Amino acid sequence: MTLGSLERSSNISSTFLLSGVPGLEHMHVWISIPLCFIYLVSILGNCTILFIIKTEPSLHEPMYLFLSMLAVTDLGLSLCTLPTVLGIFWIGARDIGHDACFAQLFFIHCLSFLESSVLLSMAFDRFVAICRPLHYASILTNTVIGRIGLASLGRSVALIFPLPFMLKRFPYCGSPVLSHSYCLHQEVMKLACADIKANSIYGMFVIVSTVGIDSLLILFSYALILRTVLSIASRDERFKALNTCVSHICAVLLFYTPMIGLSVIHRFGKQAPHLVQVIMGFVYLLFPPLLNPIVYSVKTKQIRDRVTHAFCC
Image (cartoon, rainbow, N blue to C red; front, side, top):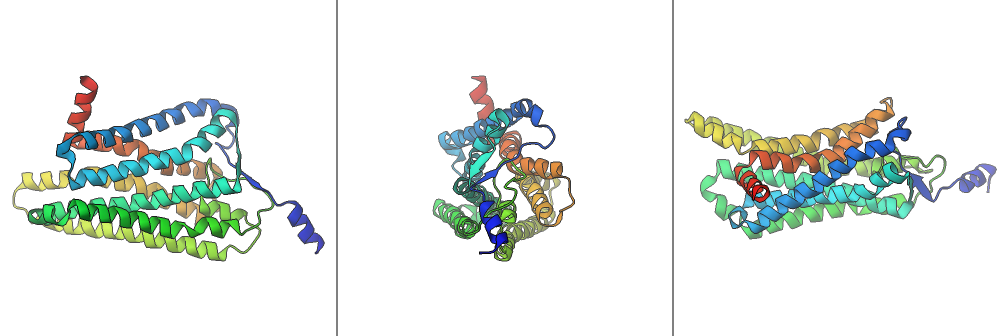
């Protein structure tokens, strides 16, 4: 064994170090206050959406069943990051074991790509409702919705399942510091003391085959929806049809914009300030679960009425 090999083996780390907000470590306790508020609102908001849809028979329709899938996914994303984020900002617990880190990144990526699938399913729901209204009930039956949900979950699990094992085979030496308060594949693989080309290629393949395809199909769905809406003679009917899509469009923008931005920064933005990466990371994982329930509660009359009734009575 060479001297270099001995030095690398002696520097192999068994843990990673998560990071808070660089340069503001002395304010982590104060920063934890808005973070706690975000998590609390996210969890309560998504639980409220699920409770209302479950207890209100009139909401047992395809649109709201897909919304319940979105709420479950957002709830899972919040719970995945909550322990490590609050651990860092409350008590400075930065250490995370390799296996725990790999498990966390599996659930984060799996749920992220599941959310992408759910958003595509919701776009399909809006397409059928506007472009094929007479066949809406016969196309989107409960059986079909269940199969769409299972297929979305199966695709996400199948694509993300290899990642922890691909990372586990690497030795990790040198600095074990991660940029975020949670683990991401594209960041962990850069700490490996080995050739990560296979991981990089597979990671790009997963992004393209999920987020890439889903976003293109969502755009295509809305192109067909817009064509149908423009053919409607009545201005009021056109507005009413488009208004049913506003909540979903907001959810799509809330999810894809920070996700694509963070992915671009990690892969190509080597000169980007570290603080930008941290902020984009928080926006990517914290804002969609926070804002989706608010958007749907404000823009969807049935849910808004039920929420108002629940809190006013």
